[in-house]
Image 1 (cartoon, rainbow, N blue to C red):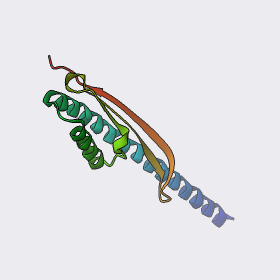
Image 2 (image 1 turned 180 degrees about the vertical axis):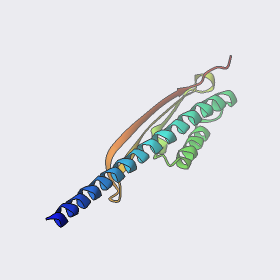
Image 3 (image 1 turned 90 degrees about the horizontal axis):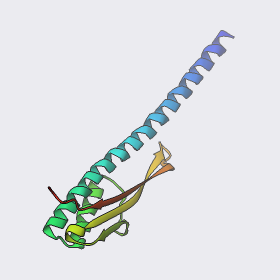
Length: 124
């Protein structure tokens, strides 16, 4: 009888360790996506300021955004980037989803949607 009780304690402990592993893995994925998006947001604001001031063409702005998204491992495609206006009326919109996957199985369990609308801000 005492051996069975010790066996169940080990099983329960193993289950709790697995639950903790999955929880921390999912938390890590979510935090990593959020931090990458924050860097991406800051970069978008920088790009809109420079592109508006220097009157860069939309094609070049789109390329800069795609390179940064790839650098941050964000799933941004060219058709998800909207560039409107030019100069001081420049406006950039980017919408994309980041999939949070189940560890080991690589199955999506959650999709976080990010939406950005960045405009030129004149310097004072």
